[in-house]
Image (tube, rainbow, N blue to C red; front, top):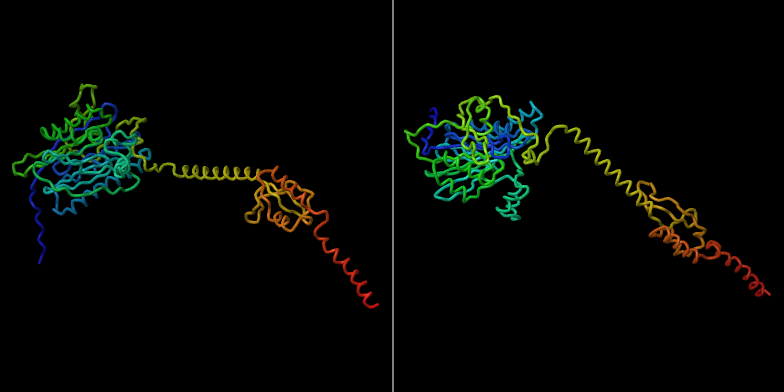
Length: 455
């Protein structure tokens, strides 16, 4: 009996979406990339500054957008496996780019993506871009930032409000890069008609609180909400690139209009340079922000890409848990030199200190002042005779002689000399070894006694 292929259940829902990305009012280049399609919503925020964070985010979107296709299974596990595989492919592609051009070493990108299968949403997340769910007038953050300040929040050391102004609020701990294959956070989200989904870069979530996000998401179409979110972020003082992808969950119908996939941000810049120009915020307040219209996604994945990055960009310091792999041998030689130098300095200090230490000891039967430490290492004495005295060990009492043989510690040279003077005052006039002489004189005294007895 042959197995019959499992029929894929008809989608219960569909997505209506919009996407906007803006370079902002401070940065010269847009290092964000975004994608919105019938089956995928994604935002990647490139990290690296001169190391081409824009290329990292565009490369990641180029790999992740392959998820924008109808599912072949309704299994939640299969859905999450597809997301994990796409993130790993993005990492592999960055490895290839760095191998081809070592100047790109250090580049990386965040990634927050929602993959739709017609029934539910699979969430994948690495970094500090965010995904939100707006349902029945309430907003909920779906992802957890992989940042230094988030660890402080989790430990109860700072509050959410304090995190927004913390000096290290932009330092992320996990990203898609060319060094290690980071495992994304993965989970499934059950959805319902009327839900609104938001995926955004930290250019928006870093300046707009949940209340403000909810206010904007409660109005207008997805495209309108995305535009207003970007505008509000710039008005709130965001100094970063801003990218927002918004989608509504609707009931699936045969008559539903078909939308094209949209690419925004760095991933679309090359295509925009081919002739698609313009922006929603030109002339708005601070002037041209460089916002770019969404570009249809029906172009080759590997379009030649070239954008001049600012060589002095604070974004370069944003992702710093790993050092680049360039000049590894030079760093090892330098580290070894530093270790040897520190060891030499330590030994020099120890020798200098030992030359200021004194004790009173014995050498060849005489009391001697030694300079150094009364010890030895590997048969090597750590002291040497400094001053020989005229005090003989044989003329000292057994107690004093024993102390000298063990070594009498002194605070300094003057203290050692005072110890010698005390020993000299207590020494006898004759060597202790001549003490048996009186017993020899006692022997003749016994002879007269014996002689008298015989008489």
